[in-house]
Image (tube, rainbow, N blue to C red):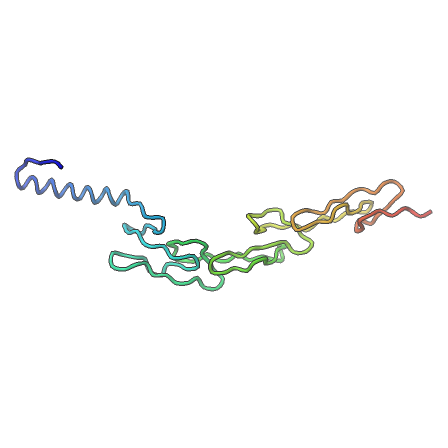
Length: 173
């Protein structure tokens, strides 16, 4: 504790100034609990995964939340006013749905048959490419998978392949 010696009117002004300074300082350095988010000068409870904020909290009421509508999701507790749109797996890009979008998780894509994934995040394939084709005089030495391209090897002298076979055939005379 400390003591202040001042005239009554001077003390009232100093005290008012100190209270305002404390209020400004506490607002500037406001840090919310991890289960809360900051909106204005309030720390509001986050909405659970699978929901979004309908109305932010204030000094009189808590945050109100709504579930995400079909085609949208939130995968963690948040103060978001909108859910995130689900990813689409475009067959034109060589992708298909591995796991459908839910209110709490995004769609997970995988390559279509005949394609392999060239860019993934976790188990979600984001970019796929058609397997390479072997050319005449080559054979398929390793078939492509969902994660690797087809490997081709050249036929030895005296053998041939049209590029669609896993082996070369001898030339007939």
